[in-house]
Structure formats: structure tokens, C-alpha cells
Image 1 (cartoon, rainbow, N blue to C red):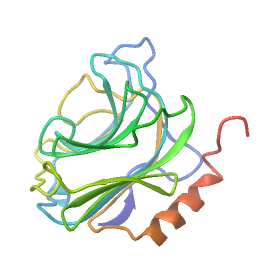
Image 2: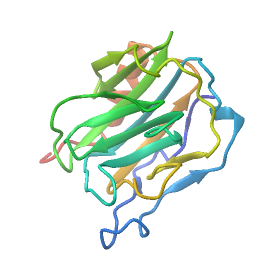
Image 3: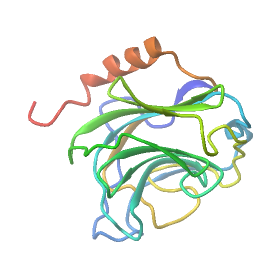
Length: 193
């Protein structure tokens, strides 16, 4: 897989907002279990645009993209947290931006693993990297790949828009991350513009 879109790359996005602030009314995309996402200990990249929000609807996490049980076990996820940050979670080890994000703002989020180290990029900036914990451990997908909720549980649904989700079975270079960010900025404008 070399960066195929998992959402439609036009001027539409997946609106995962909960109609009545419950966990059962949100839209999501579920891709059944596939060996494509069995990464083992290899390099990979997951990227998306997400409109930041985090509402505690049964969990402190709102999962935008998930493979396996990325928030609580084997797998990976891009999620927001009620602490106000954006997180790349890999094998239950958190790589986060440690700062408050603006509600309603679009963010380009890239989580990647290369040579046993996990990296988080937000809006083309390298935010944090981590080589400890479980980041280098094997990833085997047994629950599928989802956009808009956790692949493993029903209480970590995302509560806003997710767009241009891409999965790569390799680590993107910083030049490739910058190119994808620039490409998406016209569609994902900052608040007030």
C-alpha cells in the first residue's frame, strides 16, 4: 500500500458528529480485517486531516483513525484526548503534542514508525518522537481498520470531521509530509479564513 485514500479526497469529508452526544449515532467507516494492515515491526505511516474536538462520550479518547486496538493494546490510532491534545497511539504507547488544540480547527496529523521509533507531525511540524514503551513491538490487525471510531471498542467515537486518511506501508520522508500538508491546506482552512 503506498498512500491510498481511505476517505474521498474531494471537497467532502466524513462527518462523524454525534447527533445527540451518544456513542451510537456517529458515522464511521469500517474496513474489515485484512493482512494489508499486519505491519509486524516494520515501518508505516498513517495520516489524516481532522477537525479538532474532544467530547467525553464514554471515554477520554475520541478516535479519528484506528487499526487493531491501538488505544489500549496492539495496533495504532490517531485520536484526540480530553486533555486537549492530539495523539498518535501505537501499541498502547502515547506520542502526543502536549498542548491545547483549538476546537473546530483543521489539523494535518501524521503518525509514523521507522526503525522502532514513533513520530508525530502536526501541520508539517515534527512534534514529538518516542522509541520507548511498545512502539517497536509487532502490530497485527485482528479487528479491522476504522475511520471515525475505535476498531476495538464502541465508546471512543470521534465527534467531528475526518478527511484524506492515507495509509502507507513505509515511513514518509519529511519532504513527503510537507508536500501532503501543502496540498491539503487549500481545502482545510484555518478558523476565520
